[in-house]
Amino acid sequence: MALSPSQMQDAVIKNLETRTGKTLNEWIRIAKRSRLTDRNDIRKFLKAEHGLGMTTCYLIAEATRQEAGDNPPTEEEMLKAQFRGDKEVLRPVYDKLVREMKKLGSDVTVGVRKTQTTFARKYTFAIAKAPTKTRIDLGLRLPTVRATKRLKTTTAFCDNATHCVSLSNRNDIDDQIMKWLAGAYKARS
Image (tube, rainbow, N blue to C red; front, side):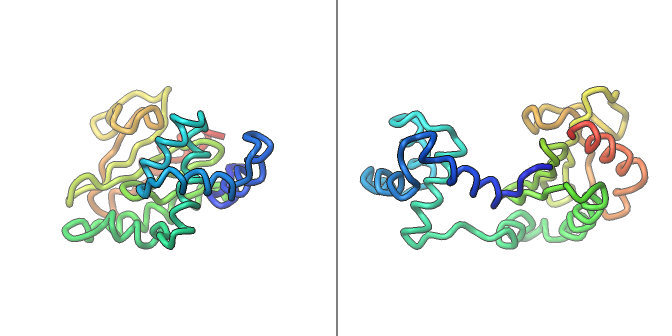
């Protein structure tokens, strides 16, 4: 079963000293001494100067900014940002999509980000993002499925999705979408 974001964070923290020789607090002090304040700059510094992996850099940068009183946005705040303004009409489509994803299995994890949401088991099998005010693009990892008029091949989601389907309203999440979702879910166990 895939780890939740908090479980993944706990695992990285637990193994940090073993892997790097320094505790999280020691890395926070190193990051603070750099006098960098932007999360991205802190991550780049840690990677370039100390050779840390991106997940570790992300964790240390977040912890450094939290200690400085700069807390990351909550999932709900990120969702509000994804569906702000004209995109607000797409939120019911997104909410239905999440409900249907969770029906695929108890091991589905929902990873809300600033611009998209990922759905994973052990690996990501689907990604949803709203690039315009009229649609949500649903990226699916279906490497053995042929494209159709509705299900198009894509590279817009990096290597996490091979196909994309557009959703404009809740009724677009139909039996065919559920079949494709189930296929992507089963393939990424």
